[in-house]
Image 1 (cartoon, rainbow, N blue to C red):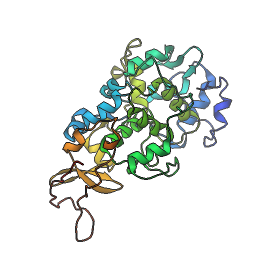
Image 2: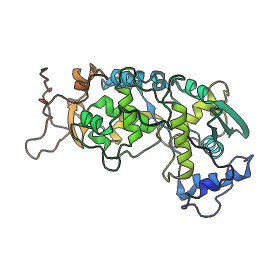
Image 3: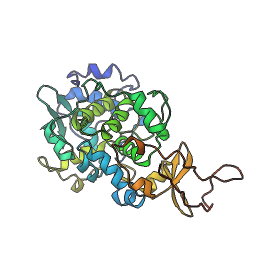
Length: 346
C-alpha cells in the first residue's frame, strides 16, 4: 500500500493546485502538520457530496437487482449492497485530513470528533460487509490469468482495452454496467464516469469468476482516500463510507444527532439517479436501457433477470437482438411505442 508522510511534504509535492491557507477547519487538528492536507482537500472549491448507495427497490423494479447482487456475492461483498448512510461534510474532511494506514500492523489511525482513533483493517472490512480472509490486496500484482484486453472483448464485443479511452458506456449487459456504477459511486468515489480504470475492470473480472480473487475493501478504500488528499482534484463522494465507519461498532458515533452539515445530493442510486446519469430513459412501454448513448433494451426483461455472472455467453446481449429505433431519423423518441423484443436462444 502506502504510508502517509508524517511531515506532510510527501503529499504537498503533488498538490500544486493549492495556494496558501484556506479558512481554519471546522474541527481542531491534533497534529498541526495535517493542515496542509486539509488545505488541499478544500482547494479549488472542491465540495463534499453525498455518496450514492444502491437503492434496492429501484434496481428490483428494473429487473437487475438479482444479477447485480450475484456479481457482488461472487467476491464476498454481498452485504455491501445493503449499506446506506448520509454524508456529513465535517467528519468526512476530518477523517481524510488525518487518516494514516499502517501497512505492517494492518490498522488505520484517524481523527474524528476531535479524538484519535484506530481500527484494524479486518474490522473496517467486516463493518462494510466485505470479507476479511483470503483477500486480494490493492498492492498485490495482477493475477496471471487476468487479461484486461480479453475480458474487455468478452463484455463489449470489441478488442483492446485502454485505460485512457475505453468507456464504461460500452459495457453491454445492464447488470455488469450497474455493478460498475455502484463501485464508482462508493469505493472508487467518482461522479462523472467516462473511461473505466483497470482496477474497476479488475473488480468486474473478479465478479465473473468462480472462486476468483476477493478484493480487499480496506486497501482499495484507503488508497482512494490517499489519492483524494494528494492527487485527485474533483469533488469528494466517499463520505458515506466514512459515516459507516464512524457510526457502526466499535465506534458507534451518532453523527446524525450532531450539528454537522449534510452533503448535497441524494444518497440513493435510484431510478432518478440512473436517469440523470443517462443509464436509462423512459418510454411508453417502460424504462429503456441505454448503450453507447442509444436506447437498447426495455427493462425489466426476462433475459436480464436470469443473468448468470460466471457464464461468458450471458455477458452480452444475444447477437440476434436488434434494438428498436425510429425509422424516420434513427433517433429514439420517448413517446414511441415499441414492440417487446424477442430473443431466440441458440
